[in-house]
Structures are given as C-alpha cells and as structure tokens.
Image (cartoon, rainbow, N blue to C red; front, side, top):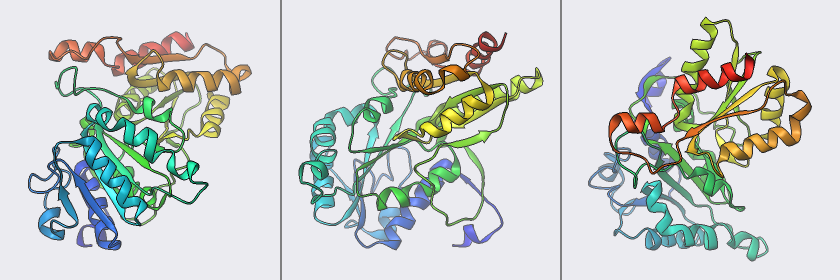
Length: 331
C-alpha cells in the first residue's frame, strides 16, 4: 500500500509481478501459488521471493519436479473452485505438461457443455538472450496461441506485469502468461492505479504514420528503440504491443495498417509457422488493399539457440534488423 500511495513508484518488472501475486493472494482466499522452487527459494527468477514467509506453505506450495503432475493438480484445484496460479520455470518445461494443458485445461469447459470451467493461471518464463543454451531459450507462445480454449498473454511493460494477473484470474478459461526473461530486471516508474489491464485489446505504445511495428513481450523494447532511430531519420513508426496473443486483436492491427500502409512484424520465435506468420496472414486477409509494400517479418534464425553470446545475439531479432526491415518497406 505504501509504495502505491506515492505519485509514482520506482520498481522492476520482477517486483511488479511479485506485487500482482501478493495482491491476488491477499484479495482471494481461494488463490494459491504452486510450482518448482516458488516457496523457500523464492522462484527460479526471484518473482515469488518472500511470499512463503508472508502467506505460509498452504498458499505458496513447492512441488515435486513433475510438470505434468503439478499442472494436473492445478487443473483439479480449479475444477474444485480454487484459483490456482501455477508457475513453470521456463517454457520448454511446459512441454512436459502439454497433455494436461491441451487435452484437459483447454477442453473441459467445451466438452462438459459449459459445466466445468477451469479458472487456472499458468505463468512461465520465455525467450532467449540470457545465454541459457538451446534447451532453455525457446519462444513457444505461438504454439499455445494455436490452441482454442485458452487465453495467451505476454506482458511487456511494468503496468501489464502488475495488472494482468487480476483479470486473468477472473477469466473462466485457463490463462497462460509468458514473462520474457530479459524483462525481469527492467526498471521504471509505475503509476498508481487499480485499473485491471484490458485483456481484449492491443496497445499503441508509440503512435506513428509511416509504418507499423507489430510485436509483443521481450521484443517490444527493441521495437521502441528502432522507432527512436527511425524518428531521427524522419520515419514515423507506430509501435503496436499485441499483449494478448490469443485471441489476437484483429481490429487494432487492421486500424494501424490503415494509418501507416506498411507493416513489420517482430517475433522472437522461429519464422516458420510463427505468430508473425499468423499476423502477416491476417494483414493480407484484412488489409491487403491498404498495403503500399509487402509485410516484413523479423524473427529468430532457424537454428537451435546458440550458447555463445555473439552467436546468440546474431540469432535473435535485434534493433538493427528491425530498422533494416523498415527501410526495405519504405525505400
């Protein structure tokens, strides 16, 4: 309460997520956090640090190393009327619970004729850029955005990190929250507000008139940096933060392309079968006659993510790659 009573509070993405968890646990006795190392260790990335001491082991539960088991337990708890928040360390580990997410969490409301909602929130760290090698650097949000019956969120700002969790817990469907690992240490001023994030709409992070940069999650800072560089050259780039990857805000994408008539889609996932491919297809379907140039895509190289720092940087979308794509579209 003290931090939010000030005009602005200096915080980090990690601390904003922690405060969102604290608020959820305080405001609803049905809510609890579970996952590997979320308790005594404070979470693999320190997000839940101190919550065990504050709320006790009934509300902050360390689990065995079995994603299928504890995600399944979370589904069962949600079916029983609780509000579980399940943390999976990194997105690659979620593959061990894919059967639970795809065949149980996503389908039960439909298969029961609306009788069995699954108000479950699953949080996981995603993305590369931290030298964690090929097995811990995936961006698989697009895979999950393919699945009907779930909502997929990608908070990219302090405000979204702080305020996306409450509406996610109020959703009768399962909600997956992808937190990019490179954002945890990002710091800034967080305005005091109790307004939940609108999960149905994308956000214009920077208005522009010449080209639309459409992205989400960990790629948003790079898109904003590219927009700054382009502004110095006289190119006005609009930056769209998708925020919710399923369902996509088609209206926001269409409206932006109608304003700028050019688009670059930035996605840290691999280009083949990516979310960037889906967004590009929707632009072609809904805004083809608005386009003055082909849609450009900036994605990761089609390789397992290298460990070596320079190779990892070369494999990932960078600000310079976004600027180059814009020049291809506008020149």
